[in-house]
Image (cartoon, rainbow, N blue to C red; front, side):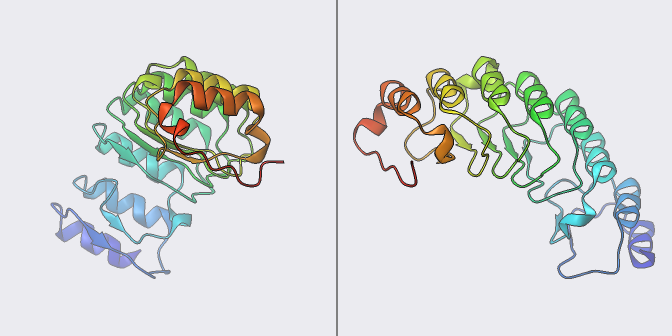
Length: 212
């Protein structure tokens, strides 16, 4: 942290910093750096350990860069719903949202973001244990249903075929390369019918694996 504070003191226009395999820093140190060097954006903390990206750090990034178009805090176990609601309130231009394995994120955060961020094109929610059909229905009813092209809910085991079918009927911009992952529990006959009927590219090629 001492080194980060020294950098912050001398390099107030810094745009990128590499922190690969740097373990002797804390979330407080990262937050202090971002406070003093507001030019550092979401893609500027190259290699920062995911355990350092907690709620306060991500919230500060949002405050500094409300026009961010891609938010990709994958594998951040300390990230929670209130911070993502903060993101939804300020980051109206968001197009890419990757929350894979952010295990504390729930339906409330997802529903709020898709309602407020009208231009989302990519949503990655892989491995979120709290996710249910509520999120799928929220996406299906949100403005971003018209722009969504890539979607991943692999290993979200609480999802059902009914919720997935509703999303697939509403989000017709998803093509055959855009559906990145669906849990077996959600790939039912109803979901497959919705996929084929509303996504013509899948009429040419459809591969189903691990569907019990």
